[in-house]
Image 1 (cartoon, rainbow, N blue to C red):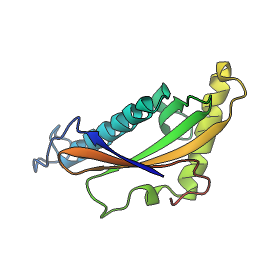
Image 2 (image 1 turned 30 degrees about the horizontal axis):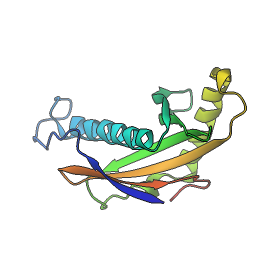
Image 3 (image 1 turned 90 degrees about the vertical axis):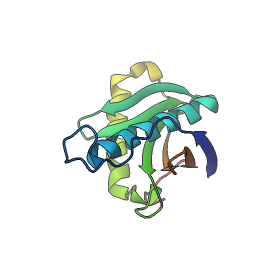
Image 4 (image 1 turned 120 degrees about the vertical axis):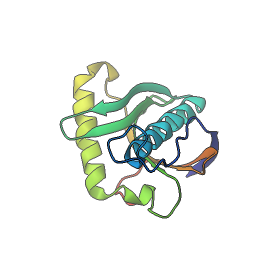
Length: 147
């Protein structure tokens, strides 16, 4: 498990607008999730990984990020972004979510034969945003969910 402080990329604040409004809390949560995913991708890139895909849609769901590690491993990443530890982060990745990630990964690999017979890994990144900066904790090689 690795933890790192990351610079903030965005914050919008809770405006109290009705749902559906671009500045509503729902839109704010969506923006927070996207910013957390972008921060996690930058962190992996700083560690020498190369982005293969972000927010990849599959029949079974979505993969937040797919990276190629420096050792040649294809890494499928689930990012959980929160403002606090109140609602859990990585713990929200259940065995069911991991099974969905595996189905999506199999579909993605079948659509990208150029990746060859590389090893694969499933990571979960728990990102917290304190209003000024992102902090991330990586759970590498998650096999059974509920980090």
